[in-house]
Image (tube, rainbow, N blue to C red; front, side, top):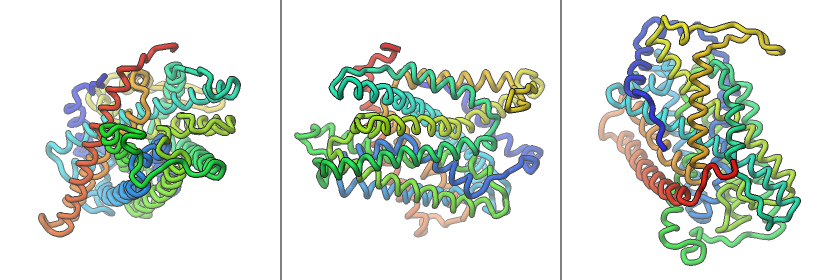
Length: 479
């Protein structure tokens, strides 16, 4: 099923009108920016450490001891390097004293312009939608894992403990409908910090359980080249899985599409680009350390038979309470991460429609109500309807395609090259006035070309996996 973005080109053009509207662009000082290195780092960790970490053991199992860790480090370096380039594009034409670009698209508009603006807008919002769908899928699977873990503990590991994720996905959606009424990105920093703590909790749990399994049972059957053809997989399966593993690893580092929005929350002193570069370095370094430990020890524990999701694929059955606790932490983390990735979508749609119909009371009027224990809240019926409709749409798609590894690989394959690599590289070349065919120009474009090929292969492999899995799935069975 495809999501139709209504009249996307029109939306993009009108959204970009804000950058040309002098009143809006220069009155941004009215927005109170309180972000710091801590809050930016928390936003990054919340965005990066997510469902992707749990698939890394499977990804390394497809690549082996040499290519697996090397691929992970390569994606980490590229993500950090391109994030540093993108941080300099928050203000233009000067990275310190130039005019603010409030969104990723605003930055592309200011630095590149033309048709690339529409392409960027389409890529960014499609990818944000894809990430939020992936988070819904993962949350549902994690809640199912808690139910199944208790069933296995009670009836034995060979018991038939099928549980449909659909009802749990609906529970997650209801929670998001409530939280989505938070007006904007500046108001969710507390939720983001809680989510970051949860991401550490379940990552450490998966790591600890992997280490314990290695100590207790020794190394799983593994090899330098990963899953063995003729033993673990067929030749064609090996090829598809290697390509899909690129997408899984790429998705684990996906956060560039919200980097500008995160940077827009920072105080202007010290300069936002310097703070954001430090936050990106700290965030990517911490997550890479966790990824390497979880991926390597997960592969060491399970070998070539590593499950697609270490905590929900039931590589671990005991201690069941610890597995349950880790999956609960995943759900809490994804509750916050969903908001981090959906807020830019909400703000884009709402600001565009309000600007187009400024006199419409339904779109622009807010009602002040008092909520017990919270205080005054400005309720917008348009915000309530718009955000609820979006959550309902993404929830429906997640119920149709609840396939963890395939969807993670697809999101990573499609998102990584255009948003993490291509646009940051092109904007930096333009802003820094790098000469065409010079040494830096050549190496930056070579990196971009390599990432493009890897992204295409990963997306193709994931689509093949989705089509195969969907043929054997009944989405509304035992809802």
